[in-house]
Image (cartoon, rainbow, N blue to C red):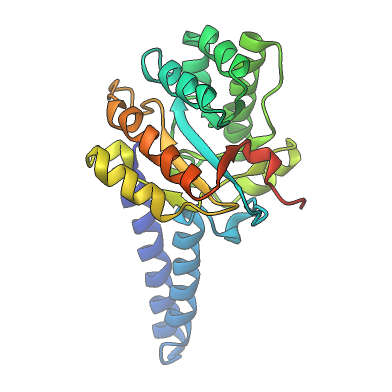
Length: 263
């Protein structure tokens, strides 16, 4: 299910829940008691589904607020043009990042995963095909995670970090429980530049630097999960300035797994 159709479907679910409350109120002559209660349930459902950093549908990783270290993370790769450029630039400047890779892209470009590891970066799981998971049942969630894990293992002979980020941060009510049983922890972010919208290099830099601090998790993209082969040249061009500002503040990007608090 695509992004806009998911928003619409979730909105219709919320409306249906509120309508059910109104029906019960009318049936029992309850003076808005049930419609208000059901509206709260509908609001919690929407927040849990789209609130990537909120623990309503299971715990989300928290990072230690350590001085001098933050996590730079990239989603939707590997991409044959942009991922190697990002990886090389980070390695040359002695920064390390966590790449949340798509299983379908990993199968197409296994050598890029090898290069990411050789450059000192960390691989994590972003699902197989970038499908939004708002209505995915546990069996479908397991397939998304396990197929991606298998693709990474086939390319690198190494297991990925046991970290999972849902595409667009969208989660089903049972995602947290399913991932926990698979040994994974769900990751959000503390700052996003919305670089996929291609707002301009300066804007990406400004938005990213606004959230630069010890323990922060910055979200950027090295690939395109939509299947349209959208370019990430603005992200590549913005990265040197982001690193410049991080270094000016005495910050170094490290693996996300090294900042994660124990559950």
